Image (cartoon, rainbow, N blue to C red; front, top):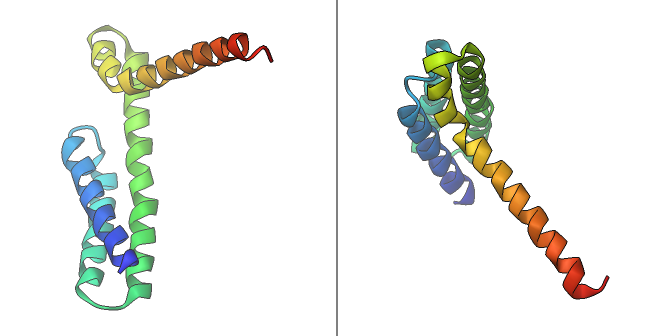
Length: 118
């Protein structure tokens, strides 16, 4: 049951990611991911846990290419400059937010030793 639930969640999140980023994902990568998701959906109709697990692993592997494609797209837009750099800034906003979190964590860590007398 756990394998099935994880597989269904993987199908959902992968399809949502494809939908949300359809214009940013190259056609060949999108086709490969969609094919692996379709295969997993077929396996979910059956009861073969090993086949479901194997198909899930394939979806996970091919969906990594989605992240790589988006990263390459964002890097390409930032390097291009001009109006495209503005579009790339939206894609890079997540990374910027993560950097801000790190800075906040450092500030919190700096405050701790002062109070701990360590």
